[in-house]
Image 1 (spheres, one colour):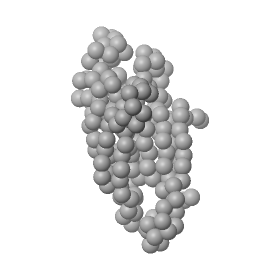
Image 2 (cartoon, rainbow, N blue to C red):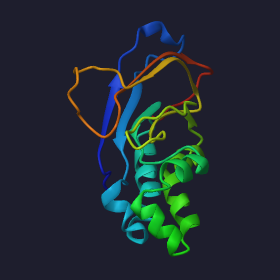
Image 3 (tube, helix red, strand yellow):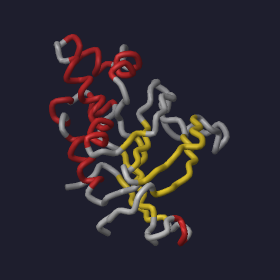
Image 4 (cartoon, helix red, strand yellow):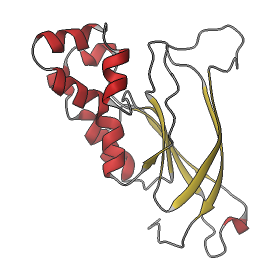
Length: 181
């Protein structure tokens, strides 16, 4: 059981962030399977994102963010991947439904785990669409104050095929709960 890539951090918050709990905010930054090298071998990796999400959820994060290689809607898949080789090939082979399922699977896996997605549809990749996501544990109330994509943190230096994303938010626990940690 390994993740493609993930980092777990417990972020200390002021002691009074919740009147009964003095716990850190657990944040996971992850990078799920997908992208041009694995999308070409769809059958081999079909369930991989589900496995990776289950592994992420085992550490009971409050906030999960990163490159999910998954779109929030079928409309984004068909719009932004219309000329993408693996999508075109899957369509020619009569496997478009399976491909769309693959392209949605990371987002859907978090939603099946009752995590809510921060609702944005900004283009986070140079190819278009929202594949960089933020998910929030059901018991934690996080209200995004701002979502900025494409900020010039390093001048004109091209770091990735993904745009830098900066999300600011406020945290408030809606009800007391047992986190089991």
